[in-house]
Image 1 (spheres, rainbow, N blue to C red):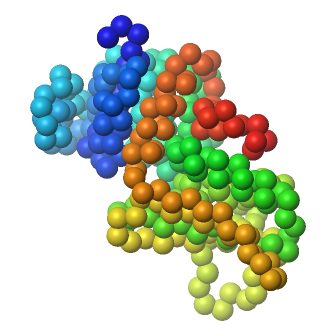
Image 2: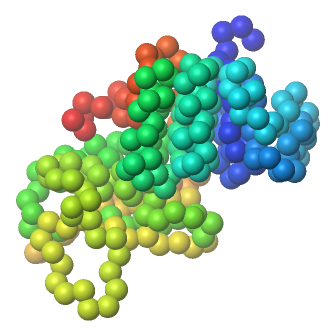
Amino acid sequence: MEGEMRLAVLGASGRMGRMLIRAVEEQPGVMLSGATERPGHAWVGQDLGEAMGGPTNGVTVSDDPLEVFASASGVLDFTTPAASLAHAALAAQARAVHVIGTTGLTAEECAAFAPAARHACIIRAGNMSLGVNLLTALVRQVASALGADYDIEVVEMHHRHKVDAPSGTALMLAEAAAAGRGVALETVAERGRDGMTGARKTGAIGLSALRGGDVAGEHDVIFAAEGERVVLRHIATDRMIFARGAVKAALWGRDRPPGEYDMTDVLGIAGTTA
């Protein structure tokens, strides 16, 4: 249909890939224009609808991202750090909106998106949900308001299949807490404890990761002091919230100038985390 935004899903067969496809199919104003999988994957060359166990939808799964980018005005990318960096260069060439939900990125990898962002709109976030991004804003405000006598711990739990720890969301929340205190996270982070660790360091921000079952995502940010605790929590019960957020981000980025954005920009709450 004329006026619809053409979106491609990268890594179509994965857990998030399938949900992204569903989210595109459900969202008015967008259409699925393409899908990719790695070379040699069983889905390559198949009709995407049939590969997913349903009726044909006219989209053939490709192992050539360049071909898919050429016919898309936006791409949804929840793949791997190396793949997302390679995709960013293609998005820059195609001037396509690149929505990145990939987690496990290092600081160096995050910085490497800058050249592509000079030519395309890149929207990257450790979590695409409204609730988590509001929580991030709150964490920064609370960390700024409470002194160093409040210890900060970020605790997250995800399903047994998650491969990176801590989660991208946990890191996003810890970064917000550190920013609220005016410090760099890498200078205060404590990523797990074992053995005779000694007393907790004043000003440290702890991160703990739990894995098990089918947990979609649970995140607690704990501010603990003598005599009281403040606990900010987000519980995700359906991963579709992340997929719908990604589609919302793509639509928001459609007419934006090149640059790097995140979900606080998309949701209009960037000022609350400044």
